[in-house]
Image (tube, rainbow, N blue to C red; front, side, top):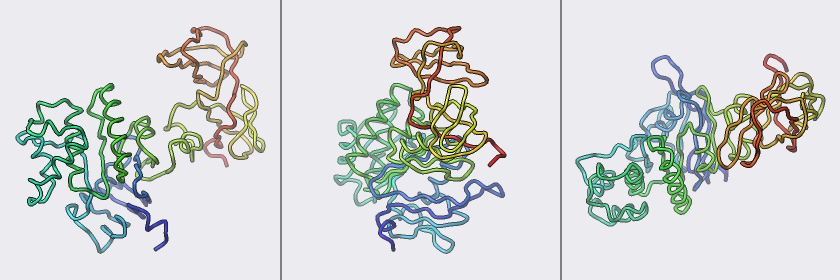
Amino acid sequence: MPEAASEAALAVEGVGHRYDSEPVLSDVDLTVRRGDAVALLGPSGCGKTTLLRIIAGLERPAEGSVRLGNALVAAADTFVPPERRRVGMVFQDWALFPHMSVAKNVAYGLPSSERSGPRVGDALELVGLNDFAERAPATLSGGQQQRVALARALAPHPDVLLLDEPFSSLDTALRVEVRTEVHRLLAELEITTIFVTHDQEEAFVVGDEVAVMNAGKVVQVGTPAELYRRPADRWVAEFVGTVSPVRGMASGGDAATAIGPIRLHEPLTGDVDVFLRPEQLVLGVGEAGLVELVEFYGHDNMVFVRVGDSLLKVRTGPESEYRRGDRVAVKFVGRSAAAFALPGRS
């Protein structure tokens, strides 16, 4: 086996799946290195949770294979049940048993011979809940219940941890706090983690790498910076982060646009859409642009500027005082930008 494959905690190859006759996944490939956290990011219905369930063994793929470490766990003639995969899973709704104490919830996933041993206490200590062992889940906050579910998944010492929208049921402030706690814990434990999310910020914060999914396919895998700066296609460019497309005429490594020449990541020729990030643009004195909207976020402002047929989003500092109706100039200050030929043109 190649060295790269031997270092992989998970290898999904050519996986396809369908419900009845409706395809859900198509020719999915994904490799996760030991100790990495990988986010499956995509819109609702793109197949993220189905892929997670196939990795866990809760679904059997119609095509392709799944390896955990060096062990083949799913293929045309192979299927290892979930309880034999050394995979921990935290479900979206946490799936805690209300009639059991915190300790008994954590112990539930362990072999009966180990439920009274040290693993329960060790898992609760990892998530900072060792003083809550005898409490009922209903007496805990949402963030504490989420940590109980995480402790239950960690108690059996899984090789791979799977998280399905783990923070979606928490309110905004608590979601950020718990997300940071979980991120720190996973980094300290160096446990291989795959988690599903439709939240780009969440994927970028927790994921060492992000696998972007659309319509049952993995369309790009990379670090958050790679996805943000070098999207593989126009769909990824528009889905990942805030972007402003502006029409341009490309010739070699540059494109002429309504805000001036822009250096492109890759040489192109002809009509293109150039995708600009808000921090690649600055505002100045001029008449070419009209401020249509200003959104204040505290740490910065997002200023929407109409230039010809394009509505450009420009990130400014919190002290900027642009108002609707102001006339401004927009300048590109980035090194280069992603661009793609117009649909239907090469």
